[in-house]
Amino acid sequence: VSRVIPVETFDLVIFGGTGDLARRKILPGLFRRFRAGQMPPGSRIIGAARSEMDDDGYRQMIREAIAEFGGEEKKDSDGIESFVAQLRYVAIDATGEGGWAQLSKLMRGDVVRAFYFSVAPSLFGALAERLHAHGIADSESRIVVEKPFGRDLATARALNATLAEHFDEQQIYRIDHYLGKETVQNLMAVRFGNVLFEPLWNSHYIDHIQITVAETVGVTGRGAYYDKSGAMRDMVQNHLMQLLCLIAMEPPSTYDADTVRDEKLKVIRALQPVEPHHIVRGQYDASAQGPSYREDAENPRSFTESFLAMKCHIANWRWATVPFYLRTGKRLKARSSEIAVVFKDLGHTIFEGDTARHRNILSIRLQPNEGMDLQVTIKEPGPGGMRLVDVPLDMSFAEALGPDQEAPDAYERLIMDVIRGNQTLFMRGDEVEAAWAWTDPIIEGWEARNDVPKLYDAGSAGPEDAMMLLHREGRRWRDIK
Ligand code: BG6
Image 1 (cartoon, rainbow, N blue to C red):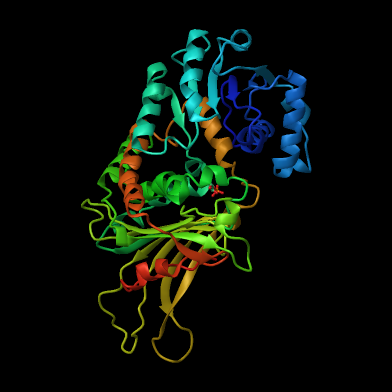
Image 2: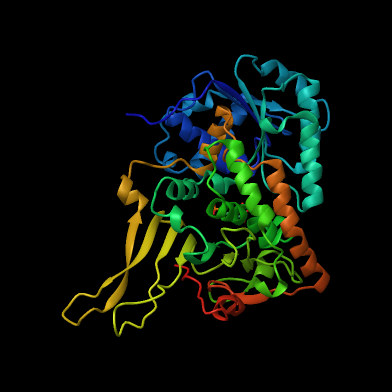
């Protein structure tokens, strides 16, 4: 039985349709949805970009992109011809008049209309204006925008204001692709679909929470962007912040876009400013595992951080006293993202001689090998009396649910949510602004102090100081493995 829920017929225009994101993620993702039977036959994807090209040229470009960046489809491109037949191309001048009349002629009135702004944010205003001037977008249309959504509060506000001139908030879909990840949504399922965890989900039972997003990739090839961003703007302000919100938010009364986003917003607003000594910035150095950040970023004087570890506090009734430790970095020893909820020690043990510290730890693995692991304490086997040992109750989602439950990639899911008109997994304007309002003073502090990141070896677990951040409080980071 197919579990695919069909969507309405649509016209999706991708501005920046020949760009990197379109070729790597958006179109291969749409092809997978097409193969899954989710893209209605009459739907069209219209690539729009500056280059002169005809429909056939674009189709060929996308065939090649899918062959290069697709997953399974590389080997088995069944259906590719019917898929590319649904593609069109319009050469368009975002800031001039070229191509707009042609685009307007292509669009149909009786289908869902969505516009993906896969272009520099400086073009958002020009695009929005022209979409309206040419009657291409109306009050039902949807627009999709990507990160980086600003580089601080002021620029994010300006972008929101520009979009608001032409579209209602209900029409704007701000992508954070972490929200489209299957396991990230599982955070909500685990918390709010079980009776077991929620009663313990507070400072009475939880000692601390760790969120780690470790990557093995460096910044080769994208230094120009990354060097101006750093881990704070690139990962923490958006992806880690979203994970933190889902872990920390109050139960929303319904799983509805604004109810969920209201709760997330409250978390961000309750986040306390971070003390400078609760943050460790790092930058990878050359090692046997690879070149230094400065080489990769082609900036020999860069002080940009490729690693961050920090201790955060959420000042509300549920979380007062519970530290949230966040950690993310490039060129670390393994690609591994995990959220670990570390429960408190037992207050009292009835087992004489058992002096070890036993803790329940719930860890949710986001990637790779998505799953959940609950550390529980049981009796060590054998006749030696009541000696206790901690063991994992380990579950891999793939094993538990079967291999053919192949989850759609984050982009596929999110694009289909746009067509369905479901904003739950998209960031609302006020959320993004609140996240920047928290991030800005931290970055300003570094700039004012000319903060120099600590070096760590490429392929390691990050700078020593990041370990100390927890050690000095009698805690330790989970292994990155
Ligand atoms: C992007 C960042 O948003 O997320 C990249 O710009 C990062 O620097 C990427 O590598 C990580 O995403 P994923 O899905 O590979 O965890």
